[in-house]
Each structure stands twice: as structure tokens, then as C-alpha cells.
Amino acid sequence: MKADIRVTEYIEKSAPFAHEILDFLRETVHTFCPEIEETIKWNFPVFMYKGKILCNMAAFKNHCSFGFWLGAHMKTTSSKDGMGDLGKISKLDELPTVAFLSAMIKEAMQLTDAGKTIVKKTKESVEIEISDEFQAFLATDSIAKENFNKLAPSHRKEYIRWVLEAKTESTKLKRVQKMIDNLQEGKSQNWKYMSI
Image (cartoon, rainbow, N blue to C red):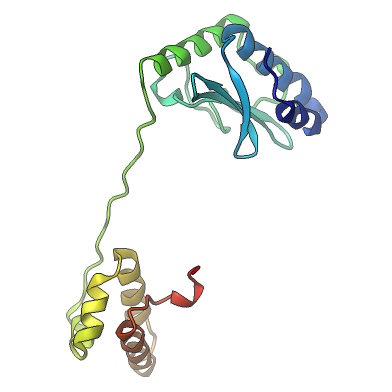
């Protein structure tokens, strides 16, 4: 077994109940996938197969978790209530049988060999409607309007909400002036809080 000392240390530092569970999972992965390499990613143990993440495990205060990177594609898994594909594991006897774990590991390896990847959800850019009132505010300064239109949709939303959600008319007008001043300099509404 090619052990990474950091994984050993992770297990040793885990809550006492987790030691047996994590050691068992680690040994099982190595048994059914001798090519596996261990590493630490996102502060917990990850098992790499042919340079790609195959599975991972983690220990928490009251439970452990174990999951497959391509679990969404696998027939042998079903996401449970904990992080990972086996749900929250607090005792060794809550794990599936060795035969079932073997089938899961082999299926994950086959999917990796076949080039399967995680399907990333694309965020839809939802444009907020710009009211006539807000358009009128922008129309008072062509540079501000041009810079507003160059902003990312999320930054445009910030300005629209900030101005139109003012509770009084006087506050709204103060915000409009501040917005125009910022936009003349090409600044977003929350520019002070953005890292440089």
C-alpha cells in the first residue's frame, strides 16, 4: 500500500470512533485499486487513480463520509444525507459489505478509464429588469450610463437594488448621486470591499 503520511496523520487526528472506519475504507480502496495514490485535497484524504480523483473520505465530529468523484454517474451509488455516497457513517457496521464496496470502486475505475467527467452546472445569467425610473437616472450622465452597461450583471443588479430599494425619496436621490459619481470612475456599488 502506497501510504501518504498526511492521510495517516489525518486519521490519527480524527475523533477516536473514526479511526477504525477510515482505516477500513483506506485499506479497502487500496485492496481493490492497487494503483491508487493518496493525497490531501480540501483538507481531507483523496484517492487518485491515473491522475484523477476516484474517491474521498472525511471525518467529522460525529460521523465519517465516503464518496466517489463520479458518483452522479454511478449505478452502485445513491447520494445520502451526509457528504458522500454512503451517508453519515458513525460505526463500522454501517458500511456496505466489502463485496459491494469492491463493486463501487471497480465501477468508479471503469468510469474514469472511459473518460467520464463531472458535469458542471452552468450558471444562468439572469438579467434584472431596468425600470424606466432607473433608466432616467442613468440618462442624466452619459459616462455613468456607458460604464453601468459595461458592468457585470451582478454589479448592475447591486446598483439597481441599492437605488430602488431606498425607503425615502431623499435617500433614493442621494444614492443616485453616489451611483453616478462611482460610475463616472467605473466603480461598482461595492467597490470598497473588492480585493485589489
